Image 1: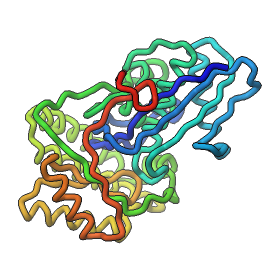
Image 2 (image 1 turned 180 degrees about the vertical axis):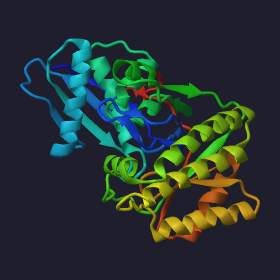
Image 3 (image 1 turned 90 degrees about the vertical axis):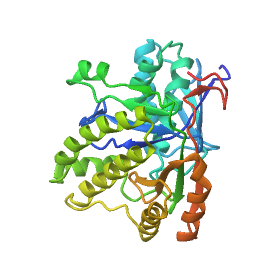
Length: 335
């Protein structure tokens, strides 16, 4: 058995949200999305192919993975083996350095790291687009964590093979922006309703889902223009409305999906007050109670202090734009 291949990837936070799949198996999204990869909470994953191993093994840190998580990893390894034409089993060890299952994109960093490590371990030479398509089949948002900074995941066109080939992520240049994302960790525990369950329920039952999806397409066009212009206020306004719209679709689901908590509301209210005080600060939330605040890097300490004061029980973390997926445990050779 070799020592294995190690890869590191970071979570990304969508500013234009991914919410809703048109193909569950291939994880093809209903709409395109756009995100910012962070420099905090990385996942480090090692994949070692073993000639003598009868079946895949999966560990999280030093403990055996849960059956549910192990099954997802093993299913993903099957995709890699199909591409490589190599049926050997592998040992997988993964360590997530941030909250897991709490709406902080742990699945994005996790499957991006797994995609990079597994592809190399099985001898595949994949470019960024191909890696993003591969990572997408583990977790849709993982396609964006292949890249650093801003990235757009294209929803693609069609179904089956055509949809698979056309649904990938690519980097978005933003030379005129110097953003930070201040994370208010209201609750780092694993959420009670997993994202996949909430997403499926929303698409199937919410009368607000399709109007939001159509408006999200317009939001994406506006977002790309705002990023190109270096207009942080516009970027923030679009991100905030897109996120709150997504949560409105969940509240209208039958039964409702509600991730907001009292702590979430305190932080959201404080962000509105910050803007009234002249600080460009805009909130976004994923499928969880935690609040992320987009601001200029120069204002990040001010925003962090305001969030900590508004909800003293929350842990506040300042994140900056982070790197794309790397080979090695924190290596500098970005893919």
